[in-house]
Amino acid sequence: MTNSTAEELMKTFPMFDIALANYIHKNAESTFFESGEVLMKPGQFFKYAMLILNGKVKLYREGEDGEEFFMYFLETGNACALSMLCMARNQSSTIMAIAVEKTEVIMIPIQFMDVLMKEYTSWYHFVIETYRSRFEELLIVVDQIAFKNMDQRLEWYLTQQANSLGNNLMLTHQQIANEINSSREVVSRLLKKMENNGLISMERNNIHWIGR
Image (cartoon, rainbow, N blue to C red; front, side, top):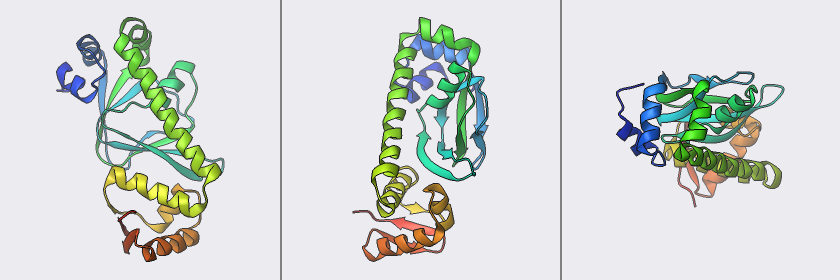
């Protein structure tokens, strides 16, 4: 797989026991994605389950007209539940996933999934926990769309970005608008309001998150 040992895999994925870590180390592949590179796109079929060994990935839901909505981040020690689900059901992806920094991904081929689920209890619990945590994140996204106004959605979005990427966010107003399915004019107006309220400070293509 990589130069990582089974013991190092267990440090990144603490739910794994040594037998599972050894099995994955023996049978999985490792792939690097550069910042901005696409890991997953709508219409793609999966032959691998993806685990994030190092790095960070952003997931988006795409609309019929190509519009995007930010969903959540996958970070070191996370697994892509959607790759597992699409692979298990032989369905294509409806999600876009893009690396936001250099990312190393463990790719577990589909032919090993039955063995993992049947013979490794720690893998079974890892998959269930992955589905649970991703489902909770999706509920938060649904809440933002269904129950929050645009300024609340923008504050939630910036909080998520800052929690994952740090307080200095290299984001354009257009990029933010794309990721919360709004317009640049609306985003610019709301960002100015947030700056006046002391939640952020702005420079060109840079937003410093201060928060409440």
